[in-house]
Image (cartoon, rainbow, N blue to C red; front, side, top):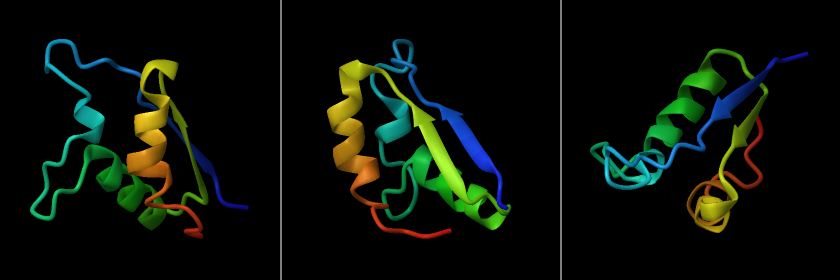
Length: 73
């Protein structure tokens, strides 16, 4: 059985000025969350659970959950 990774992504990014976990920063506009998912899958995690604020839950679903919908680890 593969372990589950719990990612605490509820920070508001007030010092950053926005939702840094959702801003593209990589060469192909990858987000911090994209790198987290990549590393977790390659480290052997079978499931990733994100804790997010209700305030940006819909934005999270649109930009992250939909992107990885149906991906099997």
